[in-house]
Every structure is written in C-alpha cells, then in structure tokens.
Length: 515
Image (tube, rainbow, N blue to C red; front, top):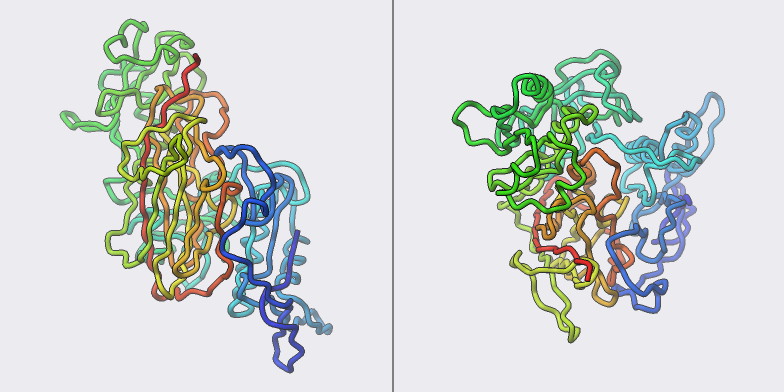
C-alpha cells in the first residue's frame, strides 16, 4: 500500500513551487483501548505485527509519503520538452520501480526513493513498514546484507547512516558495494573507506580506494574494526595440529576474531573431545551431547560454560561455521557494551513481572526469573522530556547471542512525544521463550532500549544466534500487537543537536520443563 498524502493541514492551491497533498488532521488518543485492537487471547514474542492500528499480514508493505506532521509535496518535473507537476514520492517511486530487476526488494526501492525525496524537498521524510525484505511484486523474502548505507557524498568523503550508537569506531575500514547488493562478494566491491569522524547517529568517512562510481545508497560492509576491545580472542592451543592450522587460517581472514597469544587469557577456549565422558565435569545439559557424533568440537567461555552448540568434527565446512559463531559472539558482546554516559536525554525504561494477583513487580535488577511461555511481562518506555520528541528502538539480545530489533518491527523508529509513555503487555499477556537450540535450561536475556533524537535504523546490529548447523526458527520476532499506547504525532528533529541514550534491562528466562 502506497500513500502519497499527509495527515495535517488542508489542501493547498497556492502559487508556490511546491504544493501539499493533504487531508484534514485527525488526532488519535495516545492510548489504544483494548476494544480497538483485533481480538487475541494471548501475546507471545512470535509473530510480527505492523502499524499501531493495523494488524500486520506478512503479505504487504506500507509506504507513506511523509511523517504525520509533514506534508507530501508536489513539484514541477522536466522530462525533455515535457514539463509537469507530480507528487515527489510518486514520481521517484515510479522511476525506481521501472529499474527494478529480479531480486530487488522493497528495502532497495525505498532507500533510493527516500534519498531522492529528501534531496528534492525539505521537511518530507517517507516511511516504510512491513516485510520490506520481500522481492518487489513477488513472494520471496531475501535475507538482508549487514551494512550501513552512504547517505551523502562530499567529494572524496561520504556520510554513513550510522554512528557511535551503532558501534561504529574511528579508523575502522569498510568495503563499499553498489546499491541493492545482497551478498558481500569482494569481487563486486567498488571501493573502501576509513571512518575519520564519529557522531552519535552518523559518521564521516574518507574514500581510500574507488574502482567504480560511488553513489548515495551504496552499501558499506565492515572489513576491519580498529578498536581492540571489539575483537574476541580464541585459544586454539589444545586443538590437534591439522585442525588448528585450518582454524587459524580461517580466523586470520575474519574481522572481529583473533587467535590469542601465548599466556593470554582468551575469551573462548576451543578443544576437541573424543568422548562425551570427557565433558562430565562441565555439567552440560544431557540433550547437548546425546545427538552429537564424537569426536566433537567444544567451545567454552571464561566461566567454563558452553559458549555454543557442540559440533561433530566430521561436519561439513565446520571451520566456517565455528568462526562464524566466534564472530557472532564478538558482535553480541559489542552490542551489550553499547552505552552513552554523556547523554542528556531524560528517558526511562522499566521491566515489570505480572504476578498471579495481577499486580506488577518491578524487575529492573536483572535477577528476576521468568518461566518461558508462562510468566507475563510488561515493558514501559517513558519520555520525560517536556518539549522534545524521542525515537525508540528496542533490541532483544538473547542468551544464544541472537540480536533482533523487536520494536518497531520492520520500521525505522517509533516516536514518543514529550511527556508520554508507551507500554507493551499492559493489557494483553506478553511472554517470551528460550531459543529451541539454546543448550541450557536457563539463560540471561537482555532488552536494550535505544532512545534517539532523530529516526535511526538499528537493524545493522541484527544477527541470528550461534548455530549448530541447522536452520532454526528465530527466538523472537516482535511485540507490536501487545502495544497499549502509541504516539499520536510526528515531530521534526534537530539533527545538529542529536543525542542518544540506551537503557538495558536483563532477565533470567527458564525453560518450561515437561511435567
């Protein structure tokens, strides 16, 4: 569904060069009543829903011409000798759709269209929600590449749409790929760049190598993280020589993972167990060894706990899978460390456990236990700023190292107007569950609420959990339909004074054991 209209003002017929496509403003209440939402007996972190007043089908995408307080504008366009007036979004959307090929997704289309609209007119920011990684006019969902887009070109420098809040570091190196790239094949890269200036929500980079034209929307993939704390050190000294060499060669070609030096305390200890009995002293869950053919790869963390599922030595492409899991552990740790102690935003995030008598117990301390699919939780996000709108993104960081933006789902950010609150799970039951392939019966899960002063896309941080080689369902998707409050206005923001804050709330999630 495409809406090239706005929700404020009246229809304009002025002599200005731009005109607004408007309808009369309808202001909705901040709180959505239970009767306004589609009936549902129970809410679980399982199926995505979209838009605060629409039930999300996994079969559509919503593209809006602007935010609620903005106007979708019309301007004059020139094509050859033909001059005509057209809606800015509609015109550029049609142009880009004409160039779509097999494999082009709605995300690809929107990134290009949005940048063209923002460059053409002021105070109009298009929005997209839904299954944005679906092939245009198709049914295939395409797994997105992990990247940051180039949003502005400055001669030999560029501005990337990501900054300190995304974990970007100074002097890190990034490979550049054309727009619409789906796989980071180094044979297809068109250059690389180095981060030279870091801001909260964006960064400036110098183009080091350029082999083809670099345009707005080109996709940048991390090639080298300069800050040492981002890397995970792996001790492979106990691995037999042949497998050790293969593993070291793979690690050397991977960013965020390093082989630990002699006498250095490593983050991960790798070894090969010949029999399950060798692991008896580590008190591993029985299910983690029953389905494995020994000898098997075993990886422990500093606490001598299993850091990822066991893998049989004979598994296909095992070194690739192991190093991929090492990298996920590094990215998981980096997400957990993201914070901004200098933030001046006055915001709050509270986690509650709903007790049997329906009262709420504050659970911000990180030690409250929830039983999966049973104990209910309530999430509360408060904007205490008297005059400033903030934008919310909620990331769920799972015990199996999965990182997922769970709210808003498949949208950039959710606005919270000044002195207002969003609550999720307040009226409808909200529960969570451990990933099916998690190797313990209790794990620590963390919710990280990112508050920013302008819309930000945090999906670059998303990743699946450490794997056992089999495709598994994601641990959690989103909780939109448990939403009990929604902002009723959209406000423009001052990007020159951008700020961000992050508040983390952890909980202990226990598996529901069969009776």
